[in-house]
Amino acid sequence: MKFIGTNVIVTGAGGGIGKAVAKDLYSLGANVILFDLDKEALIKAKKEIEKNKNNNVENTLNYYEIDITDSQKVKYAVAQISKDYHKIDILINAAGIISSFPLSELEEKEWDRVINVNLKGTFLVSKYVLEVMTNKKSGKIVNIGSDLSYLGQKMLSHYVTSKHGILGFTRSIALEYAEYGILVNAVCPGPTETPLHYKDIEMQIQYSGLSKAEHLGRELKNIPLGKLGKPEEVSKAILFLVSDENTHITGAALDVNGGLAMH
Image 1 (cartoon, rainbow, N blue to C red):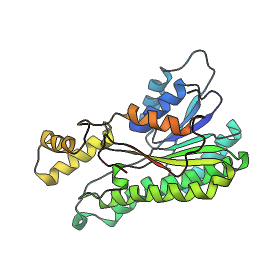
Image 2: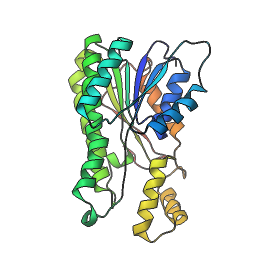
Image 3: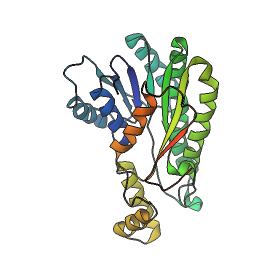
Image 4: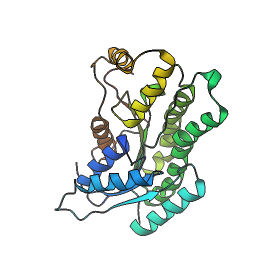
């Protein structure tokens, strides 16, 4: 797969799956724009990604320190990118946060924080990018769901709700923008070796009484392949969906979870 000449926005690109797919796309020749709220993580990610540059290709790597829950900031950033690059070909909505609380201890502020980043942020970036894609009558979007886009889990009602919402949003805009030749899909990772996942484990064990090793062991028992996923494995699934090789898949959710949830 080659992405020479394509312009890509990746949200949540400061780490985890976002950084992994940005790295792959950049190495394959895409012009990549990184979105993240954490400037320090962005700078670190940019330096790491630049090491994978294909010296036979002239492509660019830039970043925006941005709060994707702020409509005006997102609108401005996308307008600036459209002006500078003239088109946006691909959007990867990989930004996400997590926390673990029993419902009885889940504060409204925390519910809003998780829903806003995971769901509202995906909506806002998609909304303004789709305005650009519609003008060109082409484009591809991948939203990052989860195995918890299908399942429920204790202490994660807010996170699970946001990830269920990702699938509904994906399918709805896939229908709405099909007439413009825009393909919109979701990728649903299971437990993956990312800082986000390990942060969740640390919070979960505060309530479960299990050690970290015990929690991880129980988690692995539920995965038929018996291992956590890697960000690079998730990235490869995303790459196919946004590549020229995908011409007829839209509104789909591709599971990358070691068999944890089969649909």
